[in-house]
Amino acid sequence: MFQRMHQDLVLLLQLARLRFQHRVQLQQLADQRGEDAQ
Image (cartoon, rainbow, N blue to C red):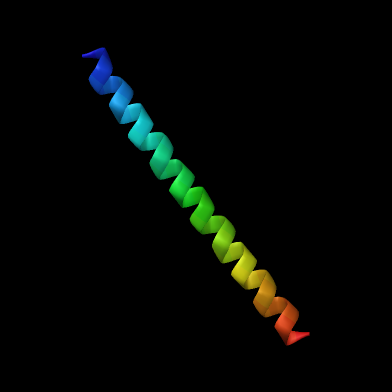
């Protein structure tokens, strides 16, 4: 029981990390486009 809860938590953490990395990449792309426009 506890082990299954732990696995779910690990999956949630991995998903959150992926979403965060994706957001950071999008922000970097937006910054690069902004620099190109100037």
